[in-house]
Length: 356
Image: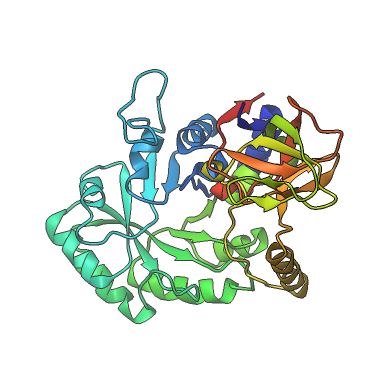
């Protein structure tokens, strides 16, 4: 009995094909948990799409998309794991002391991100000929060099192959002006392709019309998760117990309420990412109200679960266990039933993925 991700293969791949066809400079992103699918599977999809570039989050993930290791670092290879044969861009910038990132610099198929002038100089000295991409600091304020450092970075990169400037923008707001200003300064220092993220199709077109260099668009969420109706997480009901009001249940021995008389044990827990979520951005009034309401319910030990039966969310009896969850269910739920589960794909680790 498992938590399973069911994928409508035809609809999922049709969506991928549509996204790629509408974006000639696309660079697929496969990082972390592979958006719930796993990195090796996404690497195979990029290969199917016939693309020659793929971005990963960290240097450790290169082996996963190449098919030379699995998620546990065990070497694989062979016909079952052909992997992705094209260029792999590592998005997390190189830093001194990272042995895996250091080794990747010697791989001609890996493009390393550099975000500090001193790192550019260090890599140029130790690894002449390495392929690198230089990162500009945006209003994200995460990684990157200021515009007044661009020329120094290019000078320090003597002997390296600069394959582009990367501009990683925030997810909300209008940022075409910011991207244009950064690109203008960057291209005056070194004329190479621009690698951008989080720009609308119209803004991408404007950027391409403004600059006579290739503009490569990094895409993850929209490519892999945009076909919402093609993806369904389902969990099986493993057991059901009748309980009486005030009877204690679970690890934490909470008492059953007057309305709670059926306790179901279902597949899926913290190991699968059940009920795990990032702090809300609270970007609008509705999200603020939802956050407050959820907090009030949890304080009263009435936490809604991501499991649904008959189109209605079910309540947790207590926080999820590692591989199972305890839920209060209606009389219609019985052993062997499957429940729909709403999962945050970027934290989901299903027991199985079935591409149908």
